[in-house]
Amino acid sequence: MKRTIHFLLCLASIAALAATADAAGRPPKKKTVPMAVPSATAGPASSADLSRFMGAHLDTILGPLDQKVDLPRAELAQIRDSFAKGFGKASLAERQKFQSGLAVCDAISQAMDERNKAVVIKASATWPQQAAQLRQRIDQLAAQQRAAEGH
Image (cartoon, rainbow, N blue to C red; front, side, top):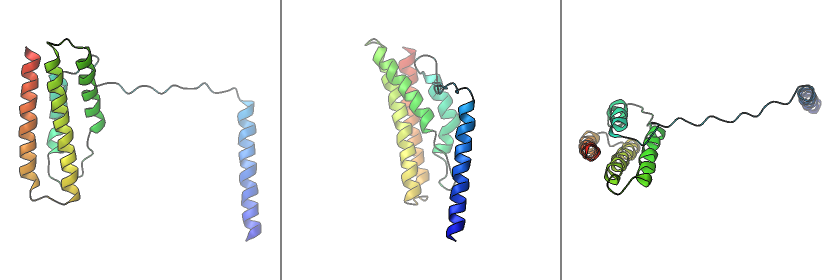
């Protein structure tokens, strides 16, 4: 048994040395810089970005709990970050539209959190009513954001 282990360790060492020697004979690899994840928009986020996101994901976020759903938190975070950057650069008169966009993003994030909680505590009986209330709140905030953007 000990000989087998020693033999395998020797083979592993030889393979590692061979790989190192082979790599030493090659020219060095160029270091690659990872590409940045593209943002949801080129400029500040808008109600159109939120509408696309909501159209693509809101039904699944607020859908039945028995369906396994990968929540699009990263995409939502990109949109929220874009609103936050826009808010920071906006004039006082324009800040309301970005603030409204942030509120919609926060409400959607809260809906994702509530869905996770409902899954954990197995609250499938009360989820449809809660999801309807969350949808109503999100739709209300989105309408306010569109109105603010229109001004």
